Image 1 (tube, one colour):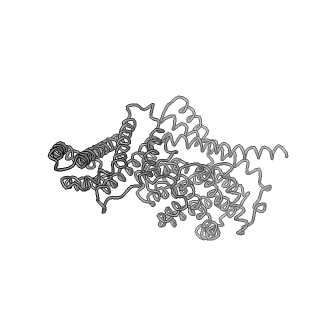
Image 2 (cartoon, helix red, strand yellow):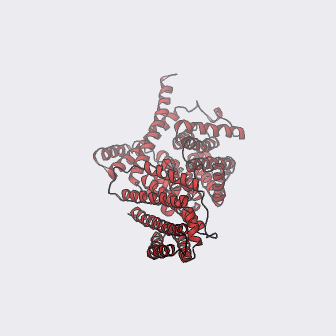
Image 3 (cartoon, rainbow, N blue to C red):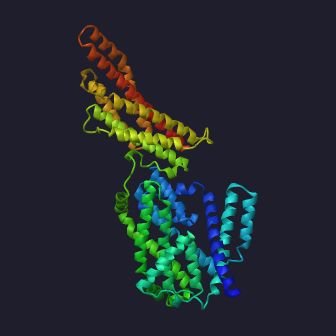
Length: 534
């Protein structure tokens, strides 16, 4: 190997390394610069799979990282802030957003040749990072990364030009179905090795620019690189939550479906491109490749979006939940995002609370709207919730809104456990309440109010839920003393036996306790929501 070929290889390898480094640095800088605003953007504008796809595309194009967008979507699903089909929309859109890197490389790297021009940007970025903090430092990091990307592309171009005549389209598989599939696999392998489809696309564009490969070969490589990104996501989900596994599998299945579509689009695309431009595709092959990349990702998203609900249900069947239904949102990977983790706990507690309210109505004979809970499953869910809450670390955020929310959630959990004990250990007392004619009014009132509380919680009207629960408690408190006096007098007059009288006294005490716990739970739920809003 002579010195020229060695230098050529070093330029290609070094250029690819600088490009990768630039992508990492720029993405980190943009993520720090954006802060929580990108997450808020995802949450605010995602109301359906279609809006999720649009938002996912925009956020990914800004952050230059589909993984950051996907992780945020998984976190939202895990916290119960977003339905799984909506999160799928974000993931489909993220694939479209990643194609912006190719446009950036072609328009600025090849057309404008910014390799030398961006060197001052790297210096300015380094100065901002070294001498400033927070937003300016993050902006400097992003600026330096942006500059490094084009320095890397310049080295890649110089290196690839050295392979002219050594690597030609004839050296690679031909434009046949078998040849295309071989190149797709090669693209997958390249992405798995570099851990970046953007780097692979940049290298492919550079090889195409140097005439080392033709358009059809480049298109097949890019298709494979899109599929290759899912391998990394799949490996990252091993040992993760159910939502993470579902998301990764969805990503794999969707990208394979899109890849199949793209393979059969190559020949028609070349024909249409040449008809529209009235020139052979080789005259502007780099722009054509990026346009093809954007086209098949956009077309794939548009074709699957109408069937997102069915697609989501298929994923849920393939990867069923391993946890009690009340705690499926308690995702271990969300623990680092304490605001999402707290919201996941609150929603899990709300579902456990609703299950207990329905169980109380069942115990009181309300068969239409009551529902017997599976108490062992519910107890396991409460224990899981307690363990998850214990794992949320806010030791350095005392007096913050999140700290106050945590305190409210601890109070809710305490009252949930006590309410559960009243339902499990003292259930027979509900029968006494149900059969006591003098408590019929209270029994009817409580079941009706419990239904009203459930409706209020479902509509996120926590103030109404707290008011209704307080009304129940106040009424039971007001009748307890007169009722106890009346029962005691009947026992003294031998109108009822001591055993029957004691059972009635315990029954009204049971009513008093459960209404107290219900009232306290709704009170702390309202407080938790208020702290979340701050």
